[in-house]
Length: 137
Length: 181
Image (cartoon, rainbow over all chains, first blue to last red):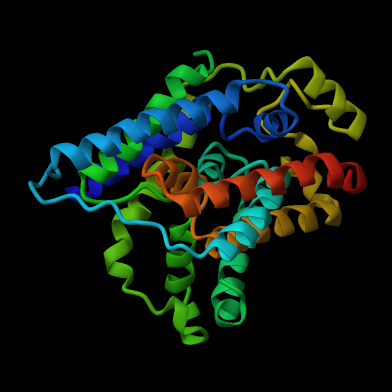
């Protein structure tokens, strides 16, 4: 039953990604050309509301639906990795026109060539695991 | 149904993050790539992938939902798949050879079955995916984990990563696209 609720949240997210056109290669291109406010509006409004939500959770000591304490984990301060990995991710994001969430959406939308992008992403993930100890972090 | 404007889409994306946090989980999509590697047996070669897959089933269920949501969005909730990007983006894309700009959801030059008869398309798609997968793990997250979750929690590493996303994206579109296409 709990798995079903995750499936529902995911389905909702998939619809949002498709209908917002955040899963469109063209919208990503347009964003990096600074030709429209659309993607900046999506990410910007999400971040502003996200900050308010996280602050509310922390200040009100809100409990989860099951009544447990909520811990929002901190990101590791590996700034060299954040920067280099971020740049590599950005190169791929602009070329593929999709980040991981939209990739799943697009497969469902019937764009089968996106499966090749996903295969590449799995290979990239694997090679990172392989090289992790040798990379600067 | 028309596409949704940013002021509807942005808040709905945060609703997804909020629901997952209130369900005791977190909002991050690229970790699933790691889990899929683990399931495929990557742990036999690299210790990094020896993880407890069972504890991540919930996240794979989210992914399954995202796939299904894409199906619903494309087939039941949209009549016209064309994405109305700005005129100036259409012009620059036409100059690069993307004639489907403004008329399709994804460029048919890269994402149609016919385009796969060209080996160049395979190289582009594989390299693009590789950079996303490798970069997301190296950076410690992707657009959902860093740009939305991390920035919402005022994480400095996420700000560094997101600036990196933009540097990489700008370099790709402005410097490398004219060389590639």
